[in-house]
Length: 229
Figure 1 (tube, rainbow, N blue to C red):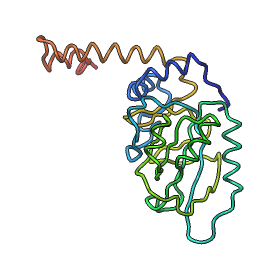
Figure 2: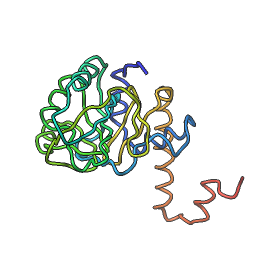
Figure 3: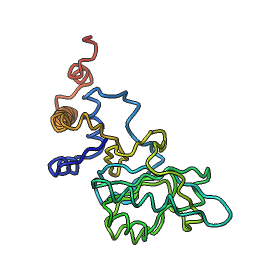
Figure 4: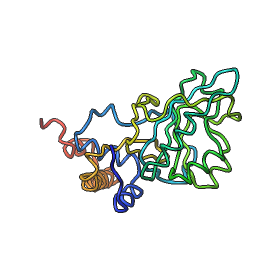
């Protein structure tokens, strides 16, 4: 979707944790609850950086022995990134079959990506230069670090990819923190602040009841409406 985030929307999204965003989206009833998030194999590498949010640019990446690959897709990736409204997130999907044998980006690529408007990288494979990238305040979400870039090749740019069970399309709005990454549906964004407040209010009241002297399991069932339908 060719949609630009407003400063107000960005400020809002950066102030909400990802599980609350996920719960708020459930209340909008725009998709099945089993969809809309990247699986737990992809971990937040720098949880202290807080929330990452931005529009995805999808990239399929491989690695094979032999001569270094051609660079046409490499430059296309940067051109596509340069043409997108930020903030953006590069999403690298492994096509090699052995993601533990290749790092798909490091400090140099991060610096270029950041210059072109990216705030983070997400992959079901590996990245590297952890200390240097962390110092830049740039988000990494990955399975593990790998020391070498090996012979990686960019296979495609901008096509839909699947990352740990979730399809990601270029232009998807991603929201991630220490808990993982949720895909925010653009059509649900206008109603999200109201639902976030509803989630926070409901959860605060329930947690207060659980910690109160009046707590009982039967009482909690009643609050949840269990057995009334």
